[in-house]
Length: 378
Image (cartoon, rainbow, N blue to C red; front, side):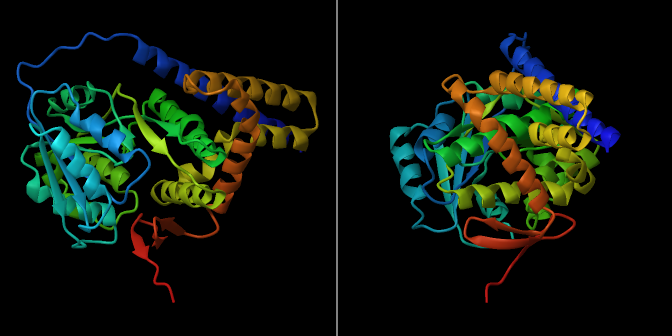
């Protein structure tokens, strides 16, 4: 028991220290201005924005894409219903940016179980350019975003470009917890993986891809039934021998969790999606929930080495929080960290109970290959 508890606490300590180090290195790399070779010709780009409903700060997020310092680009918005309130937001932007090439596809045809991917398939009829950037509706970017995403795609050996993101919470306790899940668990795990040389990821916040590469993997139809459509798209491009680039850009995603139930359903969908596409990694990821795991190891061991490991874990967790926290976030959020990490560990365990997930108003059963099968309500 002593050795087992000490080893458990040591594993949690090592991971938390690695996460804090990886976050610090990533922040330093982003702060350091890198010399960039500007291409002689910037290719025109189509941005694909699938929409569904009037989400929190939808106008502000979409407007940031209309205000890009890029010579030639088109934005295609997509909804499945002409009465969707997102249509009014798009029309407002079209009147505000009359010189911009803004199109909207209104098409309810379903091509698979994923409503988002069906939307993308319907939108492609309006896409004019060979360089494509796909981004979720709740993402906000800076004016240099497109240039930084497109630049790596000029290399023919690159399959997709993706980028990290930071959660910006709406006022409220549950949104705060949701942003901490993104900023202090999910993205640090990506930084650790990247530090170890892995590029097995792709995020819906941004995926840049050439049309020829998309066609080479079978188009959006190849991921029409996938819950983790972004991850699978990256995986398919890597099977072609093409690389995945993690961009220097960090975009902002709006976190709007209205209740505990919303938060739990949302995070269980993420966790069960990860479990579906990376079952072994998910099973071993318990050590990433540093504070509760190190604390349990200390309790199990009841010896001073485990207590020391827990103390180092707590210190590294505070360093991680201070490194990745938003400039306007309060240091008082430190007191929320034990609750946040404990909730994350509990949801991770709950992720093994069933393969059912909620996505908006729909329920799905996630199969072992990551496909989402709609659950019919009786």
